[in-house]
Image (cartoon, rainbow, N blue to C red):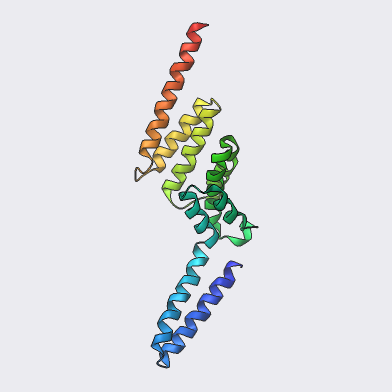
Length: 181
């Protein structure tokens, strides 16, 4: 359902609720106000993405992917602030199956934009891991610095530290192999 129709429905339900309360039917008016709020919330947060995120947290990638696949045309079905999160979720699902293939989703999520800093940090941390897997130390360290900057609440501090330690081990391994030549 297009987003503007959801808003129209929400306002229509709210209008009906107000009319019911004006005529003294408070018992019906109050629940209708709650329904109007629920419909308005689905404008801001797509229900398919919320359910996909729930299954992603439960580590059920197949069901999460099924719910995301119900969004057929993300540019029309999602408001602009949700489009980056859609690609972030796709990247997280894809990173479990084929980590190097998920890079395009994380980059697209960053270009479309996300409002929460810890999600930006998560995307950049994932890109740092992909760059490390490709043995691109310069790009990986750049993404790690950006992830650390974006992680203002220190939610990913342990993962960033662990990634830096892995980069240090990678440097030592490269130096050892060069010294054996």
